[in-house]
Length: 517
Image (cartoon, rainbow, N blue to C red; front, side, top):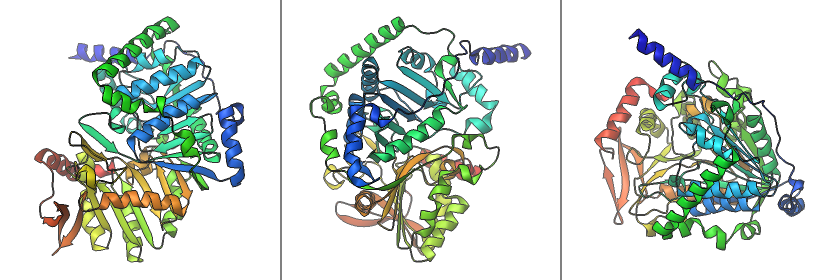
């Protein structure tokens, strides 16, 4: 037994060695004026006196297209910050475009939460072998990176810090155009996976907002918590190894084009029918504020200092709402603080409506277990609760954008949005739960525009429609669920969801898991 423990400890130490020990270099977002693309956006924005231009991207194909087109338009820099990156056709196509951008001299900085890099050290280091590509991981595990087993054990040595993650999602081109929202990188976020599709909302912003978000990226990139991926591989990978990896990548894309031409052409439509210039002619120009948590938030031993938090920046707008508050939160766990806030707003006469996942639709049933204990109190104070159904409705009744589904794909809500008094909207990576509020870092944009708020509100109301969602209400003190099938409203007296999901939710309630969510 002692021998086994010694071997494991040795493996952990080896797995955490930083053999290259490359010197850390700070860098900053490139000024927009350094590229013709950036200058064209500056020229366009000049007429709006400091306002930024915005477009919602609720459609998964538009969200993918926007990212791909920004890569192609970038001339000086691409800055990417993500919580999760999953392998798949969409990711491979984007990586291929990123490498081509690097070939033409674009500086690419990729910052990933370390959780997403499990088993990817060598792959990420191969990308970083390109002279114009830099890859860093945030809050990296120092022990036991070599295998899944040693990684799991390594996390146990520093559990309090390891469960605090960089949940930010940011895509920035030439410090001039940016995308924020709920989408990570993976086929499930771009309607390219047959068994799962996340419905989500992204926001494309151009002009001053991109520069604001560039400052956010720089803070994280230059933080001591962000380390080059080269620190975690034993040998420096060569450009020859990169060339070999690119050949494999290109071959996989060719196979995908042949084996699934419909999906490939769906994703690759940006090549033959680009839309970015069309979108730029129809932007909503408005005042905004980019909001983000300080990266040092994850170092707090207890609750972080309020001045580090995105929620502190958002608090004035949360407090001042007096007519209508609409929340869209895929993972909703209000906690006692959120409960007091929401019931207080409802008691003051504010129309408070929430759209979240139902038990049968959520991809994390444990989170639902954290949410469920708060439902009755919320309903008693007049908060309206809508829970998105699994595979909701038909394509004809699901709306043109956000809730477009197919019979072959389970649909789960992943969106995060807030709409205040039909005037302001906040879109980003932030869920209304303690994890987003206190533990993980987040980023988003608050836009002061009735027009954009109306668009976001309409998407939320689509999701709340009875053919798409269950409305939880109180009936003689018990929670029941009202929904619509075949044009007829009916009431369910037992919560929809299979036994496994119920067990997960029950377990999280029993152990008080919402404190960690």
